[in-house]
Amino acid sequence: MPRDDLMARLNDGFHELVASVADLSDEQMSRRWFGDWGVREILAHIAGWHREMEQALLRISRGERPVPEGIDYNDADTWNAKFAADAAGKSGAEVLEDLRTSKEAFVAAAEMVPEDRFEEGRAAARIIETTGFGHYAEHLPPIREWRTREGI
Image (cartoon, rainbow, N blue to C red; front, side, top):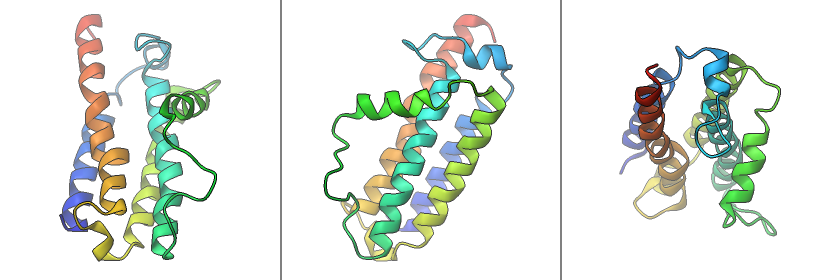
């Protein structure tokens, strides 16, 4: 899929995710309902993956491997916990702003990657899907279900 199509899906998914939480109060965003997480931790962990994969995209743009030696992303739970911990002490508005900023940097890094790296099966395309629109789509249904359950 061409980069422009991937980026359109990423932007659409991002806007849908943000719209699903933008009207929540700070208390609602910090309420725990997704295991040990609330919306605040979900957004912080998405922002963490944006930042981490921004660096992967920048490496690809320089002709390097996406993942440097010694880094292993296979233990996603550890990475997720680290990223969610970044929400500690932050307001919902601060976490939402961090999410927006991290997404902008993620997109800017993707724009630096040569177009041919977005062909099906290539690392850049997988990163845009798994860190971007696929990741947003993973968290959107539980957020909507929680809001329905809570009547918010």
